[in-house]
Length: 288
Image (cartoon, rainbow, N blue to C red):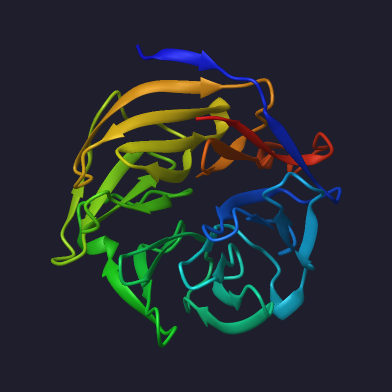
């Protein structure tokens, strides 16, 4: 079994609100600021790089948003907010706080969950309820059904299926995790071929948001209250579970993002959505 490491919280961002239930976090590589969305009401928050107080960047309901899951910032300074149960994806100009486009996956029920960019800046989007991997063109901001997953080897049982997604180190593959089965899948960007990641130490059930730092893949494991650290092949086709990270500061972690010298971990507390969460909701920083 991999050695487990217990880490202290370096900094905690408190998110204002009693029913936030944050789901994801994305870092703006130009400023170091991070952005986080509410799965429950669609609000978006800015987490300043200097550790200052969290700002409500866009309130719940703005632009018709009622839910936000994955949040990512691209190289052009655009914020992408996966619409969760709304079945939409919203793209904003960060500086102007202007909505550039909102696309709809056209299927319900839906859980538009997470986003990864290829080297050209095109976005690939998972929907945990719909067996399709979607693609949004970086320039036209138009959505297409890039891969029909029911025509692949990926099984699609009830529950949350594809979730977190990243671009592999070689820039030619995508890797996504399947929450309910704990399996990881690799997509070839050229051929659209899908194969299961040969994961030593897997499957890892309850896998959620992913972040890649070189050859190190971090996976939030929500119901097990930990972060899995995986040594991933450059082409994403194989990996090895190296260790797990735990902390007293974790509370059903749903996402992780890689900063310059730290990891940001979202404490989603989604296991308390029908009861009383521990306030305040937080995003915590731990050492890499």
